[in-house]
Structures are given as C-alpha cells and as structure tokens.
Length: 466
Image (cartoon, rainbow, N blue to C red; front, top):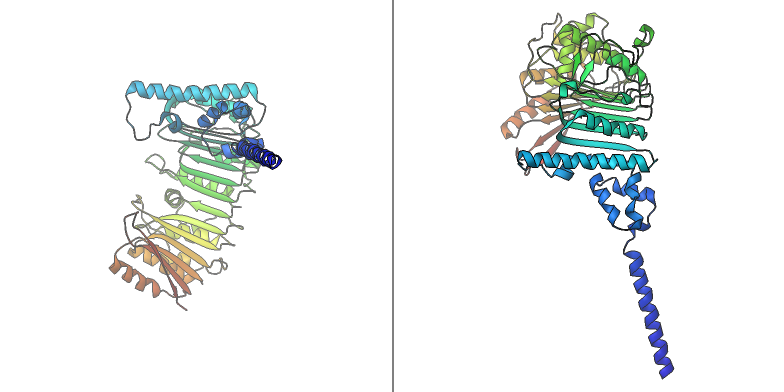
C-alpha cells in the first residue's frame, strides 16, 4: 500500500514539474524566435518603443541596436495630435523627440555594422535642417536601401539643402521625400545607380531634373506630386555632377513602368516654357506601361503646345497599357490632349478619366479642329482598348459629350461610370442618357446611397446593352 502511494506521489510530482517547465517554456516564446523573425515583428512597432524592449531580458538588451527597420514618428513621442500645448511644452516635446533620435542613431552607428533596410522619418516638429541631415547621413552610411522622409517644418527653410552624401548614394533602392509648407529644393545633380522607386511630393525641381533622371538607369516607378519647376539655369559647381552630354539627353528611361506627373501651377508657372519642359519630360517616359497625369499637367501641355496633332511633340508609347487622366468638368480642350495620347498609345488596354472639382484655367478650347475630328482617327490606332472608367461623373453637358465622343469612335467592351450623385432623380436621368450611347456592350454604374461616410453604401448596376 505504502509503495503504491509513494509511486503515485512521485508521478504527480513529475507531472507537476513537467507542466511547470512547459509553462516556463511557453511564457516567452517570442524570445526563442530567430533574430530575423523578431526584426520582422518589430518592423510594425515605432522605433521609440522598440528601444524600450531592452529592459525585458538579456536576450532583448541589445537587439534594438541592429534593428534593420527604423521608424521615427514624432506622434509616438509627443502624443501631440489634436492636443494644444504651451510653447514650453511644445519645446520640451520637440527636444525629447530630437534627443531620442540622436541617441538611437549615435548608439547604432557605434555598435552595429548591420545595414539599414528602411529608414522612415515622419515629423511635424520644427527642427533645424542640420539635425535632419545628420539622421539621413547616418542612414546612408549604414547602407540604407529605402529612405522615407516626411517633413512638416524646418527652421530657416530657405537655406535648407539635403546632405551632399545623398547625391550619389549607391545603396538606395527606394527614395520617398515629402515636405509640407517648406521651400524645399531637390538635388540639382544626382546619381542613384540602383534606385527603382522615386516618390517626391511638394518639392522644387531644377530645370535639368529630367536629364539627371537618366543617372537612375534602373528606375521603375516615378511619382512626382504637387511639384514646381525652377526654370532658372542650373550652374554645376565643383562638388556636384556635371550635366549630361547632348547625346545622353536624348535617351529615355528604358526600365520605367509606372509614372505619375502631378505638376503644381501658379501664376508664375503658367507659361509656355514650363509646358515645353513638361513635353520634353514626357518624352523621357515613353516606355512606361502605366501613365497618370494630373489636371494641371494636362492643361500645361495644352496651354504651351496648341494644336498638338499638327506637330510631333508627343512621343509614341509602344508599351503603354493603362492611361489615367485628371480632367476638368468645365473644359473642352482636354479632348485635344486625350486624342493625342490615344493616337500615340499603340498597346493601350484601359483608360481612366477622373473629373476634379473646382478646376479652372485661363484658356478655353480654341482648337482649329472640332472635338469629334480629334477623336475620329483614334479607332485605327488603339485596337486593344476595351475598357474605360470615368470617375466623379456628375453629368454636365461637356462630360456627357466627351463620353459620347469616346463611345462613338471606339469599339469598347465595357465602360464603368462612378456617379457623383445621391439624388434618385439625377441617377435615373444619367442612366437613361448613358444607355443611349452607341457601340456599348456593357455599362457598369457605381454610386453611393448617402453622402454620410458612416451610412454610405456603394451600389453597382450592370447593364448588358448588346
């Protein structure tokens, strides 16, 4: 009896120890993961919080030093979104964020040889440009692959320039720069031999920018939004790259697949010289598969180069499959540019027209040809175009006329119209007008049932016309 009791107690003790060991083993399963997986997990956490994991255990003490994904966002430190602070509090929060970034970058540079895969900085605190340049320079020295900088404010912004080490960074694969309310000029001379993605927003570009892009032979995606062009001559200095030869100026970006050109216009940039610059720039993009042009860009082309079809200003887009254009609801002169692009897009498969609100321009359509004459020869050039999408369609006379012209000259399989109306009467009227268009096989209507975002529901109606 005693022997059986002792055996039972012994088995219970072993079972309890085994369960306890299992609990201890499962209590910190993340620490048992390899560094590569832990780094991937920490990629989704702001870097400021990653540093705090150093107090967890010896395993975590120095793991943040070699972090390949670095993300600094001043909201994670200041928690200032939507909160009003006194001047002293704002200054203290700004200094806290600056010191956190400084300490991290200094410690990492002195203790780790691992490359930085991605360095992301988003701040609306007002910093001196020297601080931002120090952080960018540190990332470049660490062989950064992706640089994503979003800046809200800079002290003495008129004097701010990017660090010179960025001019010819050989490691960069992705470069994203966005500034807000800052007079920020991009590099006049640059060379990024491995760059594949360039995304610039709210910047001033030099007159030779499109020539310098040829120093990015592997560029696949280009996104230029809300940018200005400084048309003053660019004078290279001894510490910058010399401008390209005339022979290289004529080349195109042969690896570019996707491009968005969103020029920003003011009274100073509405000139023929800027439009001619844009026309030259677009010739560099003739190899793209997807091309998107903002309303201002289209109007600049039209304003500076009237009667485009009578001149060989536009290149032939042999690989263009998707064309996305912003058009104004009150302008008819977009037909000229549209027809010009259609006739020079030999492999086009889809066209997306997006109407923009509040669009205005000092010049209305005064072409030598009527709109239907511009589109009359498109059919023989774009045999593969089968689908058109029209966004923000509110049914003005010019909008309906443009759709009629397109359908009258093209053999489409489908047209999708996103109606900008919640009125049932307007919906019925627009539906009837669209269904009367010729050469239409399938009509898809998209509209919202309510203007309230919380209650809105997108309705899709499909009509097989033929």
